[in-house]
Length: 118
Image 1 (spheres, rainbow, N blue to C red):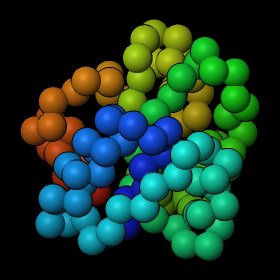
Image 2 (cartoon, rainbow, N blue to C red):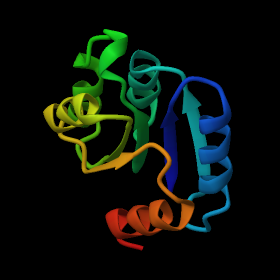
Image 3 (tube, rainbow, N blue to C red):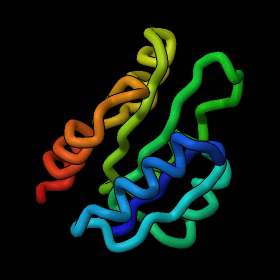
């Protein structure tokens, strides 16, 4: 399975990359910095899983995030959020699972396995 991380470079992205890379069901982890870049990636190759950091305060349009699901209908999307404003955004773009930033690794791994049917 291919997973796509949609996060700005930094500790969170590095940590999630390490976590996903260590999961036997994930064969490859691709990374993009934002939703527009992720959409371009998905236009070339659909992935089974997208993990995206949502931030309602950054003012970026969410059309590309919605378009990801239209482009790759079988994609599973997990949104990481910081607060309730982000939760409203996540619900508006039809994510499969919404988790607060700082979720523990075992919980995240369990949610991923549950979501993708492993």
